[in-house]
Structures are given as structure tokens and as C-alpha cells.
Length: 92
Image (cartoon, rainbow, N blue to C red):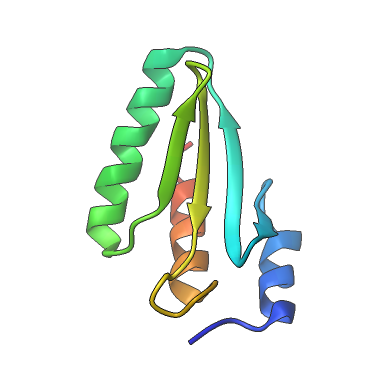
């Protein structure tokens, strides 16, 4: 079930850099080097498998990772996306 705009904004306002755009939660990260970015992606993949919800992400410019969370089957942001965002924050 999609979250209403109020719940999405509540999460955004209490988050560490997450934004809402195009019916997705998004975060852009920058790491010290390529190895740190790749290591984060590996941890992210393990987490996604553990919770059974998978983000879209892009590695670019050798040290930047962009994350996008959306429940595609629902057409937008659900509790699953907020939960995964909260779990991703624990990876730092």
C-alpha cells in the first residue's frame, strides 16, 4: 500500500539526506574512494537480500552511489521503502 504524502514527508524531514522525487526515495552518497563505494554496494546487496526488497542504484564518477527506493508493484513509496532506507542508514 502506498504511503500518503504526509508520511513520506515525515520520513524525509527526519532522515539524513533522503529526498522524494518521481515517486521514489532517493539518496546520493559520496565515498573517499572506489573501494569504499564498492564495499558499500556489497553491504547494500546483502541487506537487500536479507529484507527481501531491492533498491535501484548507480555507481558513477568512481566514488559516488545514487540509491532509489520504490515499490514498483505498487507504483511508488511504501513502508518497505522507508524500512529499507532506515536499514541502509545503519550501514554507515
